[in-house]
Length: 82
Image (tube, rainbow, N blue to C red):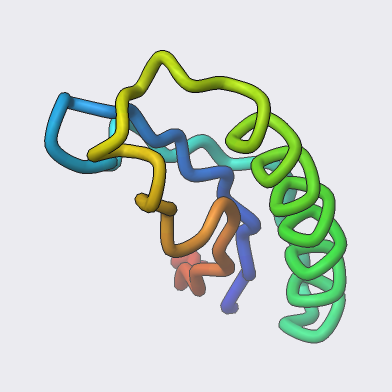
């Protein structure tokens, strides 16, 4: 059986670029469509929050101002053994 897991990706700035620090499972689904629907909703919210935060915080410095992360959430498929 395959389950589809929505994961939150946690990024950290390392003075040169954003690097993936951790990924945390949020919710598992039997349906890929359901997982992708939640993932899209969470991603949309995270993008809005990121844009707001990024526009109002300048302590990263000029080199980091143009940086962005690729994605905040993803769906992975995992096979469960019977």
